[in-house]
Length: 610
Image: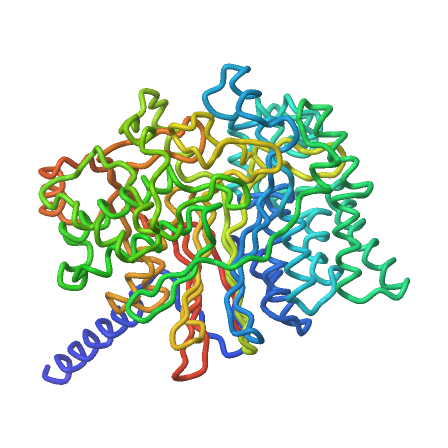
């Protein structure tokens, strides 16, 4: 009897130890040589294939970008790419701006003349110029090691036919009626013409013959240039020229304009990828990097500046006070985003110096109402913090706190989290890449016989300067997007690389991921799976740009007493079983010289390490 009791005691101890060791749905990815993570298992496999060929993290990231674009997860080849790259040779973080631009004729007056409050959500008039092909080729040419042929090989094989996944099938089925109106999209998206439901079935080989041919043309241009004695880099740029200035460009323009779009050959020729300096803030000795005001990334830096003044650890993870602090801070920073962010290459100049100053953050933090939610939070005034006078105070006086057009709950939720995938790659040589590509998601207008699905990013512009004087459409200008890769250095070396899909929820989830590690001591997998909150008290970047003051997403496991306290503070609560967002991330273990990868259990994100 005594021995039996000892056995049971030991068994209980082993079960407890096992439960403690496996606190996450997925294990940490441990690698010594490299890590490749993205939104789909097949995409991660494409990255691993590049490492197997001897490529670096940039090569792997480009292959994953191509593969996920081919899989419509949740983007396509006509979408946009934005990246942060840590270059170990320069020992610095670089930004890649490959966001498409408004085409010729896409002006505020053009859309207003059609009685639109915002540029359309779908169709040819929602399209900016394709950015992802250019972004991929510039990153590969400048920082990769393999050929374009090597990197596009998985994408070409997939375009020739890959087993389509359930999420893409559902998207096609949900938009089948709209797709049927577009002559080049219909035969690709709806291949089962003899069936009552023409959408592909899960696991059916999804064939994109036109796209495969377009990608082969890029490889052909590279090969021809190499045979003519051009360097590796010059050969990749020869492929770039064929896409943006050659026969591929001609077919994109012809096919787009046939369907009522605006893109011209000059638009494609003049568009360019910018390699730029990211913005940065220091949070307790950690340097956090984001792309600047053409995306929403700086909101995370603004939020960190405000939260640095607070004792978050003492508040307690997901306590009422902690949730309230995050919600109020995020609402303030997103109000700034909604009014002050836009394309920095076009006037007027965004007040980024003031927005990112610690003094401005401290001033904003002092205004928090700690007793209840403030549904009337407005943008602040950062201009005095960069020694200037705000020329737009008259617009701030008109700022309205809510929207009269709420639409349906289904469309609101899908718009709020629209589009995107994420990509993480790192190698033993020190290269690190974080990408949040998007655009051209299902349903996309396909540009003629290229197989290239066009972006829908025009909808992120506004048409009323009182809403945002920095984000009005004009030809060549980029709309302010949601897409926001992140990277952090510590002691001058990579510490974290992180990104997430999910529209306006992106920097909310990434902020909490970062705090989960830095403030609450989670490892990278725990941090990507942890229960986050989301605020909907911000102007959406899609559709009708709606707002829901006081609405708060909580995890199902938040206890009843916290729920009640939040309701007493004028919050409207919604709940979800998984609220982390589909985060992908890499943490760098300097003590052991290894890589820790994390992919949340929110979606299909998947990683491979070696």
